[in-house]
Amino acid sequence: MRAMGIIIARDLRLGMRAGGALGAGLIFFLSVVMVSAFAIGPDLGLLSRVGPAILWIGALLASLLGLERIFAADHEDGSLDLLQLAPLPMEAVAAAKGIAHWLMTGLSLAVAVPVFGILLGVSGKALFAAALLLLVGTPAITFLGLIGAAVSVALPRAGMLVAILVLPFTIPVLIFGAAATESAIAGEVFGTPFKLLLATALFGFVIGPVAAAAAIRLARS
Amino acid sequence: MPVSDLANPHRFLRFARWGVPLFALLAVALIALGLTLGFLAPPERDQGESVKIIFLHVPSAWLSMGIFAFMAIAALGTLVWRHPLADVAQKAAAPIGAAFCVVCLVSGALWGRPAWGTYWQWDGRLTSVLVLLLIYLGIIALWRAFEEPGLAARAVSVLTLAGSINLPIIKFSVDWWSTLHQPASVLRFGGPTIHPAFLTPLLVSALGFAFLFGALLMAAMRNEILRRRVRTLRILAASGAQ
Image (cartoon, rainbow over all chains, first blue to last red; front, side, top):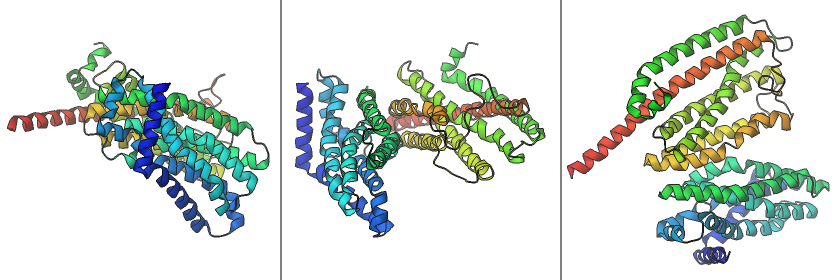
């Protein structure tokens, strides 16, 4: 547990110092919101109806953005080798790195949703629901994305590939997340779609680190 | 000769020499028989003649899922048993599976237009098959991204096993979301609900397409083995020249 905490703290520190991860995801999210507003047109009535969907798409794309770096940076400077020699099982390492990545991207996206939602004219209740549901949905995306990040760890330029590999796996998260937001706007906050979203997140939390650890071990054997 | 003898690439190549033409011949004969029987079948009550695309659509749908299951087993073969031909089979099967997936989607769209009045609908079955195609394309892209075949095989195997959770979703999508696509009518508890006049040609043509997959797979595996030999020879030649 303590070792995992140390890895999380280290990744967070590295992320802050490099400065890229935290800001870039948010800026990208804002860009997606802005671009869709331009594409749809400035009709606030229409925007408020498709707003929650745009927020989900933006959050999904922004979460995919930095996935590639989760393991690649450690692979390049050799610290992944050291982590493998450490007594901590690789599954725990992968989980810790996933948590650190989510704290840097997913959490900030969920926090930013109310602000960006106002730009799209989404109503107050829907804003709150979307933010809360993204808080559940983004960890699912990150932990499913761990698999893609680990599988392509040995590749020099994996950015686009990781997004292609991970996107199909995140479709259930998007479906249930958008459906849960819809039903939250309609008044049923904890309906079936929310439970399914939660189930997907838990499923990702279990399978993501295990598959990622297997992929990393295999890539170096 | 036990099947396990094929584990040896040399023996496999010897087997493929007559296996490929044999399977191809069986495929052509069975597909021709299945399609002929299908076209002689009476027109369906509601859909008339357009139903006959089923003899192309359903076998390719089955194969697109079956080939992914085959790849998942081959992935286990790579990771668990370290079988020397498992990753060759995996790599060779991926483009064939993707092609059957495309055939399934396109023929389904062409059939959907007269039957449902639309080429495409975001229905559970249709969408999950599209996701299957995306996973296939991702796997092919990952194969091509690596230079070292052994490394690629291990990475792809993990992805293939993770992607196989989509197979039960496709299978049961028509029961979970009964939106547009009809529910299962052949592989279901309580036996098929299709009239034998359609079922027999369907099964014959499905068997023919399965042999077609076998022939294509063996030919592609043979190419892959030879390609790896060339690669090894090149590396040896390059290191010998120093």
